[in-house]
Length: 349
Image (cartoon, rainbow, N blue to C red; front, side, top):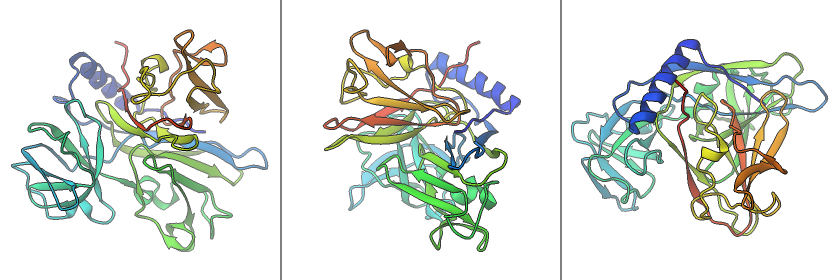
């Protein structure tokens, strides 16, 4: 699997901002934090490829921050956000290579994300109907998506090749639908590809779990990612187990270990807003966390008999999700989707 470590300066800045936000419970009044983290891709040690689950937990810098002046819907029931004082270039937010998304940064729906589909000088149209979320004064930020080319330029240090059969593979699991797409870096065309198609500008949705398959022997690969640290909670859609169980890959969106399972907000006691507990992992929804050093998976569930997170019969309430990692949440059949607002980690003073 993967592990990343913070630049010391960034760690200090993160601590200051996280502590401040924890005390004031607000997303405003703090400067953006820019730094870098390092994703560690495990080395191949046997015949089988080495698998690493990673997450892009620093984010491309904001290109606009504003507040809602008014709202409306277009003919496709997509929300149009008006922000007076904005001076955007028309449709610049949907340009190839720098296509953007909007993230709500204040209010009860802070953390919600939606793709930008159009913009004028003062308006931004998003892909979803956000009519219930966009009260006047709600703040938001606009960021470009990571793409394969911006997150892993020139292959990011992974081994390329002439096809996905011989090259290392990067598989992006879309959190909104669970669909996985595998890519490799073509050394012939000097571009990321799926088959023979150029995918340099493939959008990596925020929250995507990324599986790196290291096929080539040799040392571990360290991929340096530079960007900004998110402040406040991050919304993650957990897919429903409609007719069969469904797994959602969830990235840790912060360059720090998560809050504990007990304080994660994953179990609420309400199946419409959180995972379903049970007397065993067989009946309960499961959370699978991979050890970043060994790649060994361990499964957790919320035990409703003793009111605690467990792996088997062991209390796991204080387990955290490692920084730089992505985990799997398995929703059992017949259970609805829900939105998990991933809480910002806290730093001890």
